[in-house]
Image (cartoon, rainbow, N blue to C red; front, side):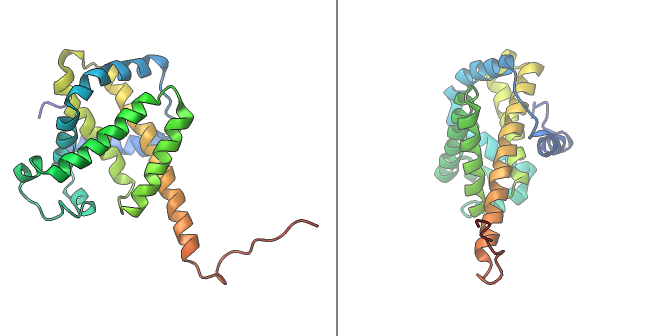
Length: 198
């Protein structure tokens, strides 16, 4: 595949690091600048990258297809490559990445965006373990586009961004999961709100 992290073991390691380090991952100013510069090139092939991400995701983690009702039973990857629905979803993911890149200098806005996306993914039944897979597939998809501009430092910057964003999405997913469990309790089972005012 030509991707430095295309092996399953390397992608799994990327995912494990993601869940462990995401809360403490902060990007340096140099990393932010590298990401923004590389994004200018990547965005020229935004639809193509979105499709490549999901084809790669379905190849390396076929269980992810279960989250996507429209693609669940499609075995033919060529059919997926030409799917308008997959293209549309890929574009939505790439749009989120574009918004994330634009907000790297405004972390509060980025955090709000990613936490809300995590909450919505609770309702899509998309478990948090899948979030890091998308980051790994993104990196594999953009290496050939960036060619000689791709460096180990740039790879680390993108990994750090995806780890940070995936951690925020996981936070949002957990918050929504807790909220839904609380709503599902019958009124008598809910913890009492005690009035501590005198």
